[in-house]
Image: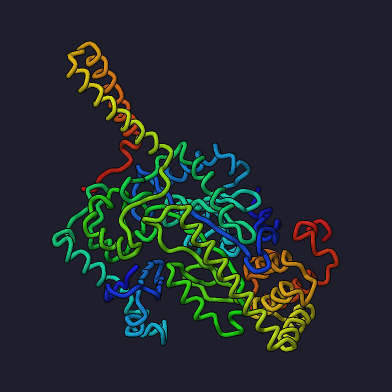
Length: 181
Length: 363
């Protein structure tokens, strides 16, 4: 993890601040922490941390996103500016909507931008089904190549049936998320 | 189960079992999870929060791990009972603010619980006594599997489990150990060692986690990274660093015995004598004296009380537990009297093994 101020040296100081239940977290290298007065008194810089974080977020958005800052999540209505102010996203869709400016932020926080851990059981089912469909599409193509049209028709029907099933499971949350006007 | 029952039982994570339990009080693992169909808690309407809680509780009913669990809606609890839950490390101070449709689903022995509608829809958590992160992870993993059978989590292949705060996205996993490091404090190596801990990507905090102060030489060490590192790697890393901390602490204690044997033994015996006889104890003083006594037991300078009793007192001497016991609100001076009397009573009791439960029967 690199320092969120200079972006060069490894971060060795973690600064967490909670003000009125709003959490801000900063990773700093020793020098930048010292510059911020962190090693001297935590209270002294407490007030400046929020602006520091906002600064880091602003840098991320201006450099990589430009106009992303004015974008609004169509699912929950959160704007990127609101996220910058609060440090919290509004819903799962926000991750996709703000993917670009988030990328740098996630890289700063975690040193990575992609998940390597557990997959939820329901998701496992989805992924497996997706693989199955892909395999069947391959078989369909081969069948057509071989001019085995009867087999191709059978495969085509099975694929469309499975795709309907997939959509069916996706509708479970229907109506729960109402995009704000 | 009522919350009063809960407050009268000793939580399983205080029983002093598990590896290195003289030094590592407890190991915790929590998973942050959100339901795909709803906005995160801070953007959700009352109706949505109510629906999320209902879905989480229905899923909980089908979980074997949470079989005998009860749900407490924080908005239905008194201020004292909410703080009792915070003092038992079951809910966060944020959740204790008693807004509607938020609360805790907790199993009878308090090993496993789910915070509902805190910062994320679900915070699935386990606490184990001693140095047992792997065991805690396995249990929380099982609970998560059971709950996910009927819950649709917000998840993406790119970013993993989606959370309100980007610091939790990915595995949503926070693993921590509560470790007692008086040797490193006394030999003034604490700052250097904790800096090392930070350098390898872990965080050191106080007894109550985020934003809390260090008391009684107890440190909470936890992972920070949740993206790009899988659960097993995260747990393994915490275990490795904790083992190093244990080794450093052991070296510091050897150094203390070598260089200041009588000073250390005197400190331990005096601490025990004060706890056994004091008529007034502030919580800060209790934690500091209990730290010296814990060190004494761990170094075999003294034989009693056992670790389990110290763990129990660490929880039951806190302000809201004392007020719950007294059945009324107490000012700090009144609490100091009650705390001292409770500590004396528990330390003088010959059979310290039975814990709170026996006391209730005997009392």
